[in-house]
Image 1 (spheres, rainbow, N blue to C red):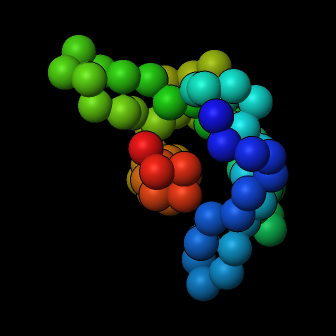
Image 2 (tube, one colour):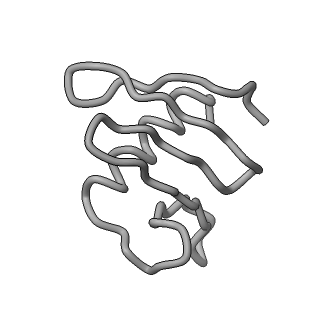
Length: 73
């Protein structure tokens, strides 16, 4: 697990991220805080969602990919 907190590149700047366990992340964006969860699909690929939902929009997907890059997943 990654040391807390860390930063990702986002929208021309940086966003702080806290990892609470292997699958849950809190992302501090300038306009809001997002709680993300990563799940694996039936082929083992990571799919990112807002925690507690099945919402996998483009913003969540892009944030997830930035997190994966930062933690070396």
